[in-house]
Amino acid sequence: MDKARLFQNGRIGSKVFAHEIDDEPWWRRQKVTLICPFCMTAVVSQRTSVGRHPRGALFRLAADQQHEHECPLNPTEVLEKIAHGSQGVAVIDGGELHLVLPDDLDQIGTTVPTLDPDAAVGATVGVNISTVHPLLPPLINSAVVIARFLQKHGYDPDVVGQFKVRRPGEKTAVGWGEFCYGPTTDDHGRLYARLTSGARPAHPVAVYGRVMAVEKDRQERPVLRLSDGNGYTVRIRSDHPSLLAPLTAGAFVLAVGFWKPWAPRPGARTELQMFAEEHWQLAYWTYDASTGHSSPPRCPSPLSLAQRTLRQARQARSATTGRPPAPPQPAPAQTPPPDPAVPDPASPEPPALPPLPPQPPAPPQPAAPPPGRSRRRWWPFGRR
Image (cartoon, rainbow, N blue to C red):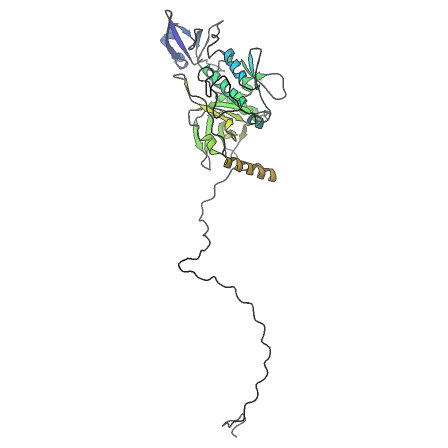
């Protein structure tokens, strides 16, 4: 958990936060009793570990303790809520929640999202865990709820262990980290190593992280940079600027799709990238660890009819040529061609006529009758 409450002399005190733990605050030095921020369950503070496997500072349940049943941080309660509203893509199995993954990204988007009829639109599930709007497909919505729930628990390994995924064609569930890579750079590095080793997953995966910066590509479209790993950079791109425009630096994002390593040119830094094609591939929210405040999750607006038409045209061109569609390139700066000449209505001029074809030779004319005799002073051969 990222926060707890003081409990002294039988009275509930103020909230304390995980980012204070490593500074050895007074309540840690004096071993003041701590309880869950939403129930009376005892918790303990855990400092950041130092070693080969670093972990974040957090509050976790004391030994042999469980959250009260109605506590929004009670995993059992949250698991039941997620499974209830998932339309069967999330099932509870032996105290664990299993998210059933499809093998095709298009299968995710064809699932019609629905709302829990017992809850109002936008009603929260627990505390600051709500349905994402515009409405997301059940699998994506369930993944977002899980990611936000784990964020509030500081990705406590014991809590993460209660969430599993079932990959296509496999009956045995695997850990949550086989589907969702984050929030740390080391988690992103696991995906990068997996993709570069040739063992690419046959199903969509999610990357969870925080937007470090919003950059621009050559077409002046936004590009999201999530992290810089050892020899690679994690970025989210899209041919549709409207999908990335709402996300700002500092926002947390869960991006679901097919990720791939890509080098823009020989010798350049490799990029672990995803191209977003649909609004439901991106869910984002803000979170302040110092206060524990979290904004409701959202996703970009769906593509317009014009954007979908353009994408279909690119896909059709790609199917014809057998090559993937290239992103639109900006036209080079040049002088535009002159407009066709238009006659001035104030002083119209007739258009030039084409040259006439050559005329046939004229027929021979009869010789003119000899003129009447007349006196001439000179003759051809001298004087008469």
